[in-house]
Image 1: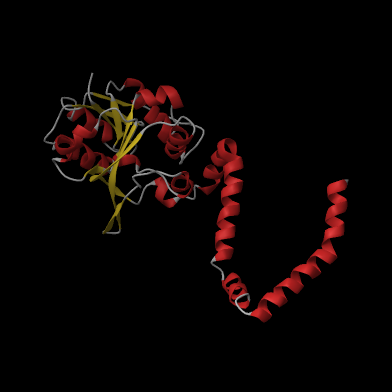
Image 2: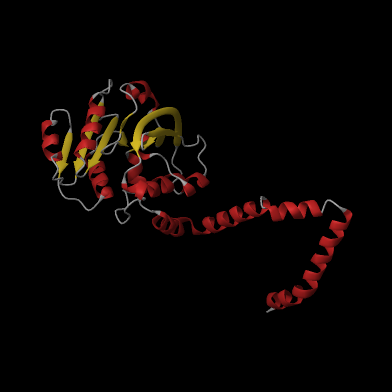
Length: 276
């Protein structure tokens, strides 16, 4: 059994595929399985894969129903203990990154590294927190090209949801961490480079995320949104003004008068609703 299965999916992105395969080939540590799933490309990708057959452990080129269908095909044939999705156009941060960091791939279900993100030639390092709260997944995700996933976790959580076009990897992380309580390790090393020109970077995925949240964590989301609104109020100029008013004796009397007036006007109606 391999320690790692690296899975690349591709569709009509020959240039990106060549860059990814070259990056994988240049790794100084080669104790991994390499899988490429191509969606039936017509741009020469299939010919390129044939030319690299001696290096690639498994590849196929056939029509699929989308990104996550292709990823699930890769999972189904993978023999590694940990899976890493390094998709067409992504590449490793440097040639020794696996050699220096494969020691971290023990026990934990998810092992997350930093990700270099490049947009129009400008790069930044994306870092997930060491202690991962629900709020992080609420507004963000784990960096897929730099997160190793224990293959057994797919038996627990399930494969990627092929009904979703963009956020199925985020859904998987969300459920794995906060429904199935999987284990997690953060490593402060940059593993991979990702370019902000893919479908998940240019399309609006908020509707899909909202559907997932409402299905699995609806009660929590309502509480969380209420909390955010309350924090926004606490930090608002209106709240700060009220705090300043209450610092004076006159201000306290004024606020007391406002409160008594509110009770006189509205308490009877509320009492009726409670009793009814």
